[in-house]
Image (tube, rainbow, N blue to C red; front, side, top):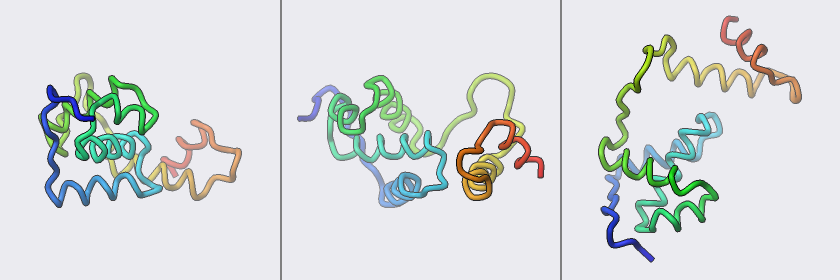
Length: 118
């Protein structure tokens, strides 16, 4: 059942393809993949409660990402605080290298830091 108070979340074909790619790729940061799944599920016309139950996540998380998508689409504005010193591509590279190069059971923060420098 849909919630009549919720604004309809409609996706363009390009947005849908981008979000599906983010949700599917194993190398996508899990936060981004979760966000993509939330937005894709919201676009089906489900209420925040139904989306939260379907994706086994918090209602507040669904409400936050639905609202942010409705306001900004796929673009994100920088958050408050000190600007990042590394790019999304660098973060992605460290995650991929960590998953592919470090033996199973040996994943540590210190090990990931060493990979990012090497």
